[in-house]
Amino acid sequence: MKKKLFPLLPALILSGCVTSNIKPYTGDGPIEAVGEENRLWHAAERFEQQLEKGDRLEGDAAMQAYLQGIMDRLYPEFKGSIRVYILKQPILNAFALPNGGVYVNTGLIAAMENEAQLAAVLAHEGVHFINKHSAKQRKVNQLSSALAMAGALAGGPLLATLGLATTVTGYSRDLEREADTEGYKRLIAAGYDPAQSYAAFEAMAREAKASDAESPLFFSSHPKLQERIKSFKALSENAVASTPRDINASAYQDYVVDLRQQVLIDKLETGRFNEIIATFEAPSQKALYPEVDLFYLAEAHRLRNEEGDLDEAKKVYRSLLSSYETFPLPYKSLGLLSLKEKNYPEAGNLLRQYLVLAPKAADAAFVQQYLDMIDKATN
Image 1: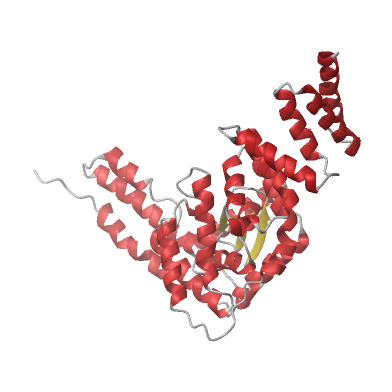
Image 2: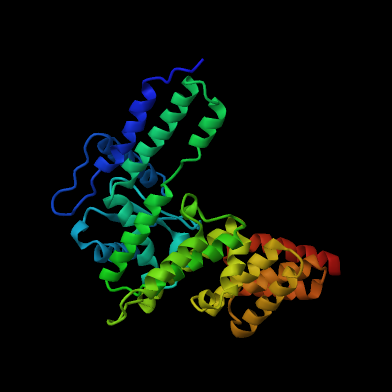
């Protein structure tokens, strides 16, 4: 007997056209959200309030103003409508909310080598807002879930169909490619070097490989990184190179040099040692950091403690001590390694020098206990 198809199913199939009725913002007048878009807008505002109350935002007003200036350059007609914020997270990520809030993690800012690379990411996220991708994707998700239920009611395999529906998360590949293509046009129109678009994704691919993840969070629902790098290279090759294109590497470095160090510290504290090591193994990335920041590379090797790591850490510590005799931190770390190897004379000398250089350090009492232990062991 032929099973009856519930009336719900054709109605849902017809509703698949609903995303075509969602028109992008034009920038010609005030930004207004209606219906479902309005509900998404208010949900985004509540989410933003939670972020602010949770002390998750970077408080550097000058840096936020700098990033906002990049976004305003990309989307001049949406100035005041697209707002950029910085999240204090070392994980590589960025996202746009349906109310115009664009959030960029400190980890992503640190991974970019110049302003043009970050502009490529911001241009992409701006498209998600002005083209109302959140509303479109919500419609797609609703349709997928409803079709799954309709199929189950019609006698289809409930679990298998629902399982397939749950894979529709984040933006679809079509919407992501739309953001790539239109964001790229914004990058060109704003006068940025188009070649930096794929360089930005290459930096992200390197971080993804180092983190042993299939992709950074920023790409959890995006096409594969290598596919996107290839796509952006093709776009860049077709760009007209008749006018100079901005990179603004020097200005970018001035704004992010301190943030980059903080990201290294945050990665150490969260055990992201491979990412730190990969950063300094890439010549273009290593060149962005002052030599003194090699201390965090040594710390990553010491704390990871895999084969050859301790030897590499000691080599970097000793190099820093020869160049920066008054830099206290390598004395402590190298002293602790010597102590672990029961080289008490060297450990004692290094730890004492640390206390001479940093007598008021928060861990001074802790280090003194080690010195007392060394004295007992050698007397």
